[in-house]
Amino acid sequence: MNCWTKAQMKQILPVCCFCDKAQDDTRSEAGKGLWQDLQIYMVSRKLRPEDITFAYTCCRDCLKDDPRANAFRTRLSRSGSPVLDNR
Picture 1 (cartoon, rainbow, N blue to C red):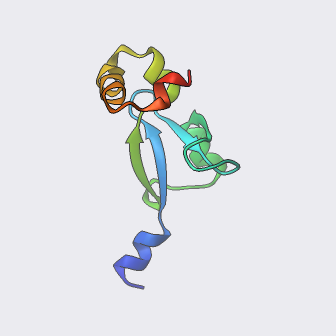
Picture 2: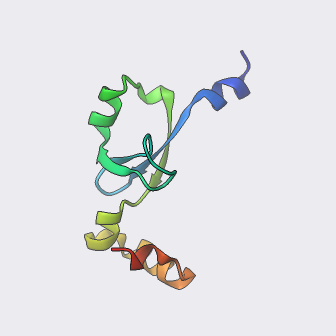
């Protein structure tokens, strides 16, 4: 098995950089899944950190309420993203 095969087998998991919740897209369209505690997500799926590539982002709750997410809000509003409108 070469390194490219190993990289393709890894799961890319969106994780909120503020609250450490993972987005579970298992039963939904990509990017539309529910956010849940990262540890619960990993234990329930018997995943190890080395099985996953973490993609850090910001969950909708933190984007809306957390003052540390101001840079995300500013960037999204400048880009005209509808994410901020769907609260």
